[in-house]
Amino acid sequence: MDDEIPRTMKALVGNRSMITRILNYACSSSSGDGVKVTTVPVPEIKDNEILVRVRCVAFNPTDFKHVDILSPRGAIIGCDYTGTVVRIGSKAPGNWAVGDRIAGWTHGGLYPDRGSFAEYLKIPGDLAWKVPSSVSDEEATTFGVSAVTAMLALNVRLGVPWIDDTGLAKGRFDSPILIYSGATSAGIYAIQLAKYAGLKVVTTASPRSHDFVKEYGADDVFDYRSSTAVVDIIRSYPNIKIAMDCFSEGGSIEFCAKVVRKNQGRVVTLLDPGTTMAAP
Image (cartoon, rainbow, N blue to C red):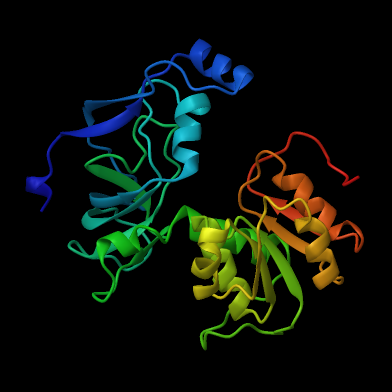
């Protein structure tokens, strides 16, 4: 298959100057030509990497945020992908074979030779997974940034028990957790992980999404736009002390902080608020 791999490929790359990106950050705006499709070299892989022919990608908020503020000109955009293995480094972990279906994520938006919105991408062999025949390319490409974000937030930062090979979590316990913005991609994964861990899943969503998040395991749903939402959650779950903010903009961080403040709880946010926040 090496003979079939071209030397160049099409890719979506960042196209904003540093000055424009600084202005976007300062003004919380999006201006200038953000991206363009161009021809770039097919990435050269290291011994521990594999080369993937991209078949499907997913779009994440971090992608357009990189374009607005972080991505230098020429950086390939995109994180999540599904594809086919076409070249394998001599020391690449993972027992890969040419032709394997593969999915995963990469840190796109910063480098000229690494990103998923391209015909080919390179990835370390241990940062991907083999896609079973029962899972479509479209489905597989969603198990990337959002799923990993949910695991890092819940299992690593908030101490939610890991799920073992049986599909159950060690040390299951019936404690409440707030997942703010449960209808987002990260929120949906967080709801399922928390539910498998035995937690009482409390989430926020607009009324039209209440049934949607309940289908994925939410036990209780509150309208985040309600002026009494914080009070209602505290009244219903007075022992709640952990929260994951899957939106992390506007007043969502303060909302979560108020909910867990009485119990001196913890909130994991997906964006850095810039300052340490104490709920009033």
